[in-house]
Image 1 (cartoon, rainbow, N blue to C red):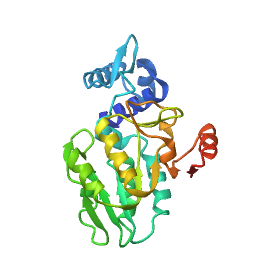
Image 2 (image 1 turned 90 degrees about the vertical axis):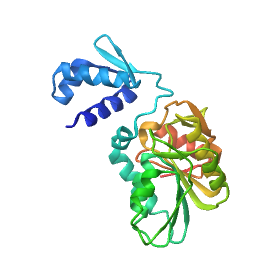
Image 3 (image 1 turned 90 degrees about the horizontal axis):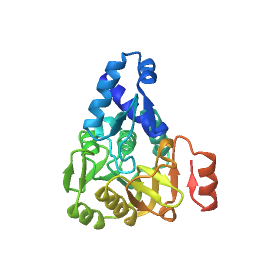
Amino acid sequence: MLAIERRTQILSTLEAEKRVLVPELARKFKVTEETIRRDLEKLEKEGLLKKTYGGAVLADNVSAELPYLMRAETNKAQKVIIAEKISKLIQPKENIMLDASSTCVHIARKLKKMDKLTIITNSAEILMECANTDNISVISTGGTLRGSSLSLVGSSTTYTLNQLTADKAIISCKGLDFERGVMESNLEEAEIKRTMADNARELILAVDSSKFGRLSFAKTLDFRRIHLVVSDYVPPEWARFFDENRIKHV
């Protein structure tokens, strides 16, 4: 296992369990405790966790944003499941807005195999992913590049989105909370997703199961804005909540 893969899994464990211990991580990854300590030191320098005696906790976990390459590797199997489900919901000739989440990159990989679609996105990676695809049209929103998320943001991005209308907007998020709604780790990213929602006939929230019940920094949307939630697994309490609020979920 590469060091970046191990550190990504350490962060995933932290997000799920809120605390990790050096001996347990060493046994899990079959490496020395010193290797784990070096991993924790590097992640602490990046502001993603705080070392404690014998382990670590997340640093400011409501606002932390994982580096893109780490996010791309986190919960990959779940994102592939979500992408497969969403690909079955898209019809030829539709205009689809995709945000710059790693989940939407997986969705784009499925959609680019279809014919006569138009994809509108602020994701630099999705633009590259679809660059050599002749059967679909791809529109870039333009904007200022955020290196940590490979997303295009800013006033020019929202201006472009406001000039367009999509059949479906597909967005992801950093967390879902019963009271706070859909949440994001960055204000600019939250604004882009709201603008996509404002300019689409249908809003699909593509969210892996680790996001349920998790707080993040910035509120993006109320649940009433969402037409459909697509996930690898919807916990029973969330399924009831969606049913009570007449939000479809698969």
